Amino acid sequence: MPLDHKPQLNSLGFAKAPADTRVVVAMSGGVDSSVVAAMLAEEGYDVVGVTLQLYDHGAALAKKGACCAGLDIHDARRVAEKMGFPHYVLDYENIFKDAVIDEFADSYLGGATPVPCIRCNERVKFKDLLETAKDLEADCMATGHYIQRKVGMQGAELHSAADAARDQSYFLFSTTPEQLEFLRFPLGHLTSKAETRAVAAKYGLSVADKPDSQDICFVPNGDYASVIRKLRPEAADPGEIVHVDGRVLGQHAGVINYTIGQRRGLGIGGLADPLYVVKLDADTKTVVVGPKEMLATRTVPVREINWLADAPLTSRDAWHVAVKVRSTRPPTDAIIRPISETEASVELLTPEEGVSPGQACVFYDPDSSRIFGGGWIHKG
Image (cartoon, rainbow, N blue to C red):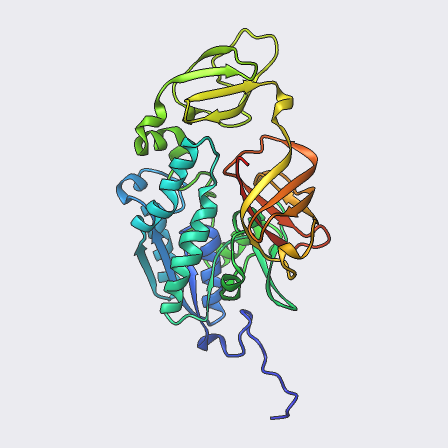
């Protein structure tokens, strides 16, 4: 063999045949992860499908559209059978409750607005499941997330999906460089969900027309309050609705029924100007309301930062970036001022409404599709 000859890399980036490359696919039972598994199996990879049972089956079976219900485990198994690769269901109920559900409930009680899907990726899928993939002697783990992994000068980088409407970078900012070396995201380059469904139809997968999951998997119909009421009964304790100027305007039936920025359903009609929830104080059981302009935030304290840029966070006094402070908002211009390697103050050049503790603040390179990481918004 000539000295300058380099072995050809397969589609997952390994210098060996697909048949010699084992890939664990995290299968939720939805169309995205099913397509990933089917595509890789079709390419000849040594595919192992793994589905996590994250919470009680009996409660889950009655709910459609949740990512981890019994029906979804069945759907994942059917895809594996059709495409001819092994499929395992792992009971992660206790891990999920300890790492995700309990914090979700406690964050709400603390007046925050948590994002449990991020914690699930960080603490369950990309931690415990990733370790399981390594135990299975896999070369990598693939998921159906819409995000791109590119190899740069210093290793694997995280980049936004080609389809901005499907991009899931907000939920994956806490992926570490070490995890990124092992992960693969085969759908990140696709330009539409229709493309994914077309691939599913091509393989004859039963999930080709399956609706996307809209809710947090363990929160039926988006009803946060009922879930938290079961986990933390004290969250439904009544209290006062207070104006920022100190006036008591009414009573409420539990701070869990309110979120920062909420306007409707406050139960304090008859006022000349509309009022919004501007603060939740779980300790005093108080819902604080005020005019809309009080929701505008310019300075955002961020901690637990996972930094993914090449140069260290503290190597500069300030970083000019774009940030997302809610998953549904487009990135906006901002300046990060580091306090430590894991803490910073983020200045939004255009103030944003409804910035809430418990949400993520995700950092983007303003000049490319690269994600520089992110952190968690706290009360400061």
